[in-house]
Length: 259
Ligand SMILES: Nc1nc2c(ncn2[C@@H]2O[C@H](COP(=O)(O)OP(=O)(O)O)[C@@H](O)[C@H]2O)c(=O)[nH]1
Ligand SMILES: [Mg+2]
Image 1 (cartoon, rainbow, N blue to C red):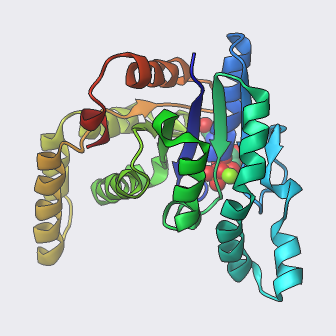
Image 2 (cartoon, helix red, strand yellow; image 1 turned 30 degrees about the horizontal axis):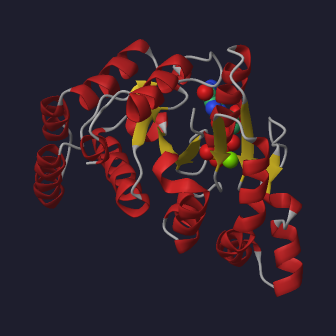
């Protein structure tokens, strides 16, 4: 069985780190070998123990001292430095030789996704066996405009990284049943978000923009059912696993999944 690399991608605080732990624990429970790679040099108090850790090479603290920059500058330098350590990280990943490698990415999504480092990392570790799990932050996803904005962000991650994506609704345990139904409904039926957008208090410009964005996403087929997950209740791990299997072994057309 070929190795699958799973990148966790999402906005700051969306739950990447906790989902990394929960997914790894679920694999352990199913007796499926897996390792965790932490690519966040600023991580503190991780809930898991990564087998491979960017902090063994450098930390944000090191960078602030060595380059004389503050935390924001250090984050950017750190993001770019990750790719310089990729050969060592690849050696370690190869050494473990397990079917699943779960990769926790830096807190702020743009630090990884938008910078060239991410493409270098993904290409070096093996792009054709990579997949991303994109986390929708439930608090943002609750409003029609927030939901559409997240849909755009996850589309931009597909565009930039060019690997298949599974979209999940993170921390779904904090949502009420009504909120959960509403968000899942939007993701399953584009007409529903259209209706919600138009019944909300939007200005003229926002309405026009919303309508254009809506049709573009709809026409591109970017609406896909969200998988509700929770790192607290373990909800959705089986669905993520099934999604991965489907993408790599289900004979699905990759183009269809990507776009
Ligand atoms: N209720 C709940 N809280 C969560 C869940 N996942 C993460 N959190 C909390 O959300 C915060 C941010 O999560 P974290 O995984 O660090 O986000 P990251 O910045 O994307 O890595 C933490 O305080 C977690 O305790 C979840 O599934 N349910
Ligand atoms: Mg994190």
